[in-house]
Image (cartoon, rainbow over all chains, first blue to last red; front, side, top):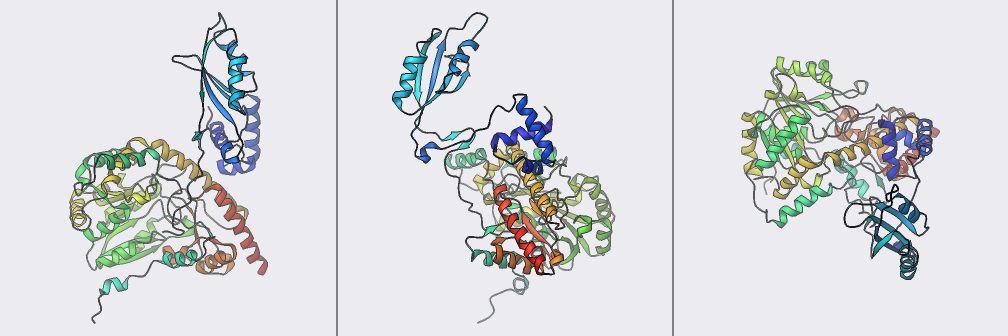
Length: 163
Length: 388
């Protein structure tokens, strides 16, 4: 991939909130060039969205997250795609991965309460025809998410002026 | 009572930066762009290796010149970065790059010898030379040369007593670098006049757009060059106090002698951490370099927009803008800026008299900090310009 595009993507992956004019300065090109490239990347579906990493615990908002290991029966000609897409459509599901190993899909779910999440698994997910079994793991604490540590970063402990 | 102090130590001037440090310390809410060390914490795997070494009970001295394993990694690193081959006996592991500078001067200089020191540059060359009784001959680097050393400047400073040239590139405080083409005529003169070179390459990992070139790699130069380097800047390991010297065995062996009497050895756990740094941390360094480069572009652009002359520096993590238009000395400007806007920058004069009219601004800070500081800088210079 062209170096310029990669630089933009790498930067945006960590700092989605950057002003594109400013990003131009940081990358040594004009703001318009960056804006054009970002528009193209969006159009091509390479940039799929912009999100903010939030520590909901610190915000005092209750949320329950769970990882669910799912075993499914793959379908002729469709493999896992059909069932994976189907699961992806639920609002409660935040991610769906096809993975190697003892089970097939790894799903993450977000809800307000334990009950809400368990109900979703037992009433919506498990009854789906192709699902063989599920195993739910509730997330107790997030330490790091999307490459970002959840703890407040250390204060700058450097001396104020050094040679 | 008799004066307890040696005449030499009384001749030593207190560091110019110290004065400014005291001033800033009285302003706890000031934001500082005055720091000469990375804002990044040491990459985790390096820290982990330091911790493991303690857990394994590696709490003893190492051999004076350093762990063999670390020296091996250093020789490999020198080969792949600057292209110079060293044997293990040509490497000494020191307590930071600074110790290497001190040892080199003490091992090589006699009273009456002349050592050429280009300025603006790091604060320790002149005092360390003074302690040996050698005479420091200052070469004033010029803004119009982007603070590179030119052959003409070097030649004008050479006398029959000249024994050593200090080559501080990539440069603190200017951010200037010397390319291979810049170094070639310098090397030629050194060979012609039989001068040794102390090449302080502590910022070698931090060059932007072009790879660092060392004079040691030029033909005929390795035998007359001591390369000083270390882990502080590139690997963000200032507090670990770990550096090294590579050079001719005959000189390094004598430096080991002083080092063994004065220091014994560099900190053992730092040495183990250093092995990990050289083996597995290229990616971490690259990431930091990318961040520095973006900040560098941000500052150069900010000064351009303010119409403050500032050449584009391609090394270290400093920019060196010229503030002569305001009719204030560097120190007056920096003091007033601190008092009015609560931002600390270092007056260029802390790095030699020829730094007058310039400021050293460090970009070892987050973009957010730099943005805030530059908006205050803008307010400050607009006010100064308004007064006129």
